[in-house]
Length: 345
Image 1 (cartoon, rainbow, N blue to C red):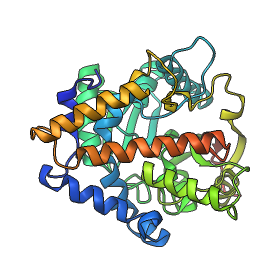
Image 2: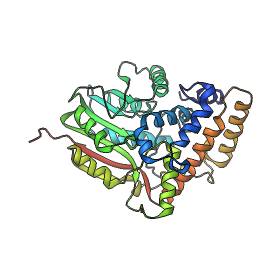
Image 3: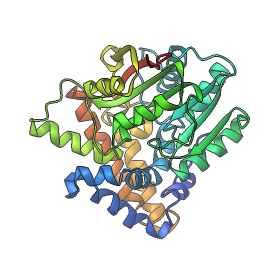
Image 4: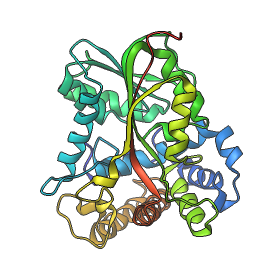
């Protein structure tokens, strides 16, 4: 059900941004980042606008190349990329012990790939929280096509200011999403607030590992480039995330960087030098074909001006992410399972 055709990709570039404004929006997005003179505090102060621009520009490309679930996964030998992504989603559902009729919140749900898979897997009702209008409209259509409109819904809101009452949800999860928060303690506190006492929050967090050295200029350069490529104001370390969870009031059940024990490296699909049928569009040949297609569609006016610029930004981001992964300074799957205490006493 994912968009897989060239025309779908071309028509989706820019999301809710007016087609004539895509090129300037891409430039404005780049200007937020340090490499182009932007300041970290400016990115944090304007994170909502920055992240919205990023996902308006990038979502169509991601769905074209990756599918409906816009995240990485640990991977076993003999397992396809799609199989590993589904297992990754089932794992978080099992850790939360999801049961039929539970009310679940997906924080930063993208276009809802995990939401739909987990709803089918666990027979739960899931609310997807997202601040990007284009992703919500796309996710709503995919819910309809999947026949899940009764059990899955989307709410457009900022996860720093959720429009839910205290103690609303039986479980909360986030997959590679809360890294976009300008203040991670504030974000975790909001999740704590809407979660029922005694219940669990689980997440895969994108962050810098213990190998990252903030005084190493190469490490700093790679980190800044990955932030640019993926629309993140500032990646935190795993230790900072853990400390923030405790400050928010959670009890830590367990936590671990699951990337460490992955039999097949999670970043393998990003390696353009490797040939793969299952992730052909990420190979050097696949990227060349996509770039040629995007340039052609932009030239004839089907894709908006600036589409190739966006594609180049994403390819560059993938290359820097691969570098960060090989240096072992970045992980997209620092996993934690935490619990909101039954009482504050």
